[in-house]
Length: 117
Length: 112
Image (spheres, rainbow over the protein chains, first blue to last red):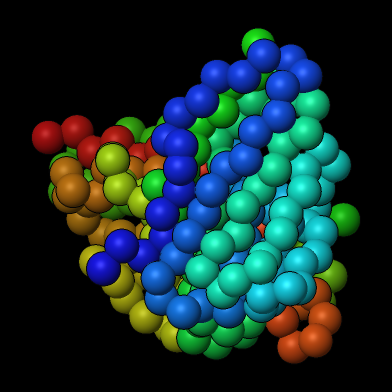
């Protein structure tokens, strides 16, 4: 039972390069999320998706793009990497929209540590 | 603006001592509140949720609306409690859905 799988675990980029962080889940979850966590800070939502073909911006979407062509995959693309994007990126999923009851909680991936030099 | 504050970056306690991890929030309306935990070399995972009034691994969290706090408590700390703890209010984002906001986290270190 893999859950949420993120690749790569670590990556170093030069300024201006682009890359894609991969996220896949095998739980048939409709909702998927991308968060970033800067050193000493909390997680901030970048983008989320409520199902295949539907994505929406979170709190900090600038400099990123996402797509959701399948239920399983939710890649995060960085175009023109900048030092400000040095962070740990977490992908998460939930079976349904978050509810006040907490009945649908987030399942997290292990994280991807990105450094932009 | 919606804010969540965990004032302590690091909290060290001796094994068997009581633990209190502080969380204060500044939200309009009545957010739902969660605590997430990340043990060493493990993934971030849900610890407990306010609405369930549950006790998980001996931890409880009381919502104090007057003080807008949701502190996490445990009467007797164990070494296996050492981890990063994140307070996460969930605010309504429309269409019956909620979005989580995470605090900066508190690293709990339990000294044997």
